[in-house]
Image (tube, rainbow, N blue to C red):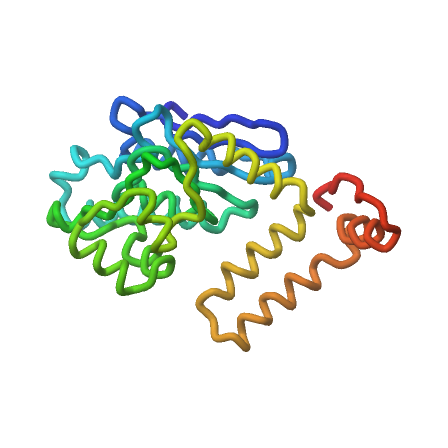
Length: 258
């Protein structure tokens, strides 16, 4: 996978978009490599995934304009489907995902970050959906995920104006969870990943599934997703150890993903 690097670090791992000469721009090969990298993650050993870009300048600067410029409508739609298929796989990935955004996250880069469970960024980060300034619309889920994250009004404003926003505004509108000095970003991501990995993997995965499945359902249907997630945790080794330790007033043993 020449454009995506996988680095396991104990119970969490990095997926690194590794095309720094092009500011990590997404072309068909990068998307294919990302798809293959996700398939190769050992989710029995890794409990959280951090997605980042290589280098200091960019998370992902966008989709590759040089590849897209001469596409016909059918080719453009197929490219959009390739990106959406990969980003849906990331969004539905069984373990939690954190986008650690340093530098530019524009167009497809912003869309990649939004496909993760949540986003943290450096104080040098820049976000945006600049596609209307190029004569196109967002193509990898930007019209859908941005509206769900920051509300339809703000999403429409950002997309219609093609305006980029800096880290402080991204935090204010709810696009990111936290902003860190650039030198501290990946340490902060690893701390978050470790905190997630320390909890019962079965419970964390079940909670992610319930949240994702219930988001667009009416509440009376959404709570059924939670009931199923809740029930699925019982009689597991993790639940028995976690509740047993609480009742016995001791620290629980490390959870075992079962």
